[in-house]
Image (cartoon, rainbow, N blue to C red; front, side, top):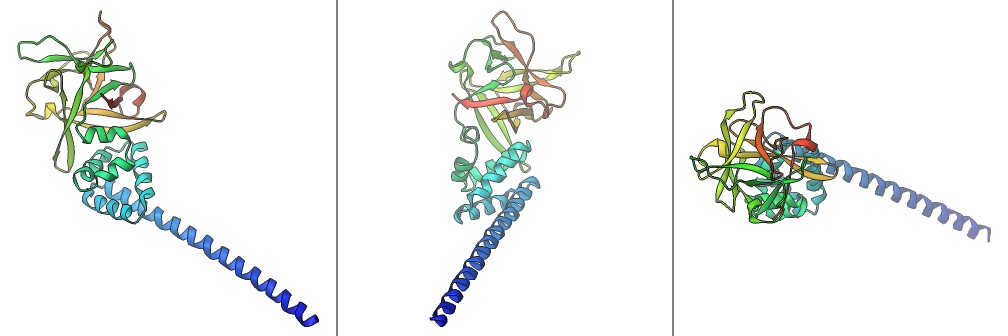
Length: 270
């Protein structure tokens, strides 16, 4: 009887030791996996930040195939919070490089609208006005751009992004579908503000009709700064309101990245 009791105690102690060791191994395994994923996140993030987009695409496809999509999601979230312009290049290279499904799965919806060339509305966050082109043609067959004080749904405010890749960067022609014109920044500056007027024009064969985007996050919204390639001015709406409630569009001369509440745009489905 005594021998049986001793054996039972031994078995209980042994089982307890096995459970402790097993729990320890599981905990170490989880920590190791977490550490490994952090390293993979850092590797992917650094590839994007340094402009090695082909490597970033290869890594992303590999992680997705391995069921490690959380790595991609975390990197995308971090890029947007960091306001990294390279987010757009990474997204574009995925979109055209067999990774469209990754963009659809891990990027905010407005990235898909941009890359897919869908009809969209560009809404200035500060005034909640949608970008449009005016009805009047000037002698050069160009139209002034405005933020519309009333319209929220007509084809006057319908746009689409047309992408082009050059020198490891993605740029966009911003096409107004109502008038079949492209957004263009004037070469002439205002003598007081140094801002430039924005037009719609029939052709898009210079860098004045090309734009690049910088994502940002503000109050849980994903927004975009929109910059002109030629002058690096950011698209904005002016302070003065005309009789129709419209505001003229300008290219802003100055730094804007720290002010998404004032200078950024929503890109929403039309």
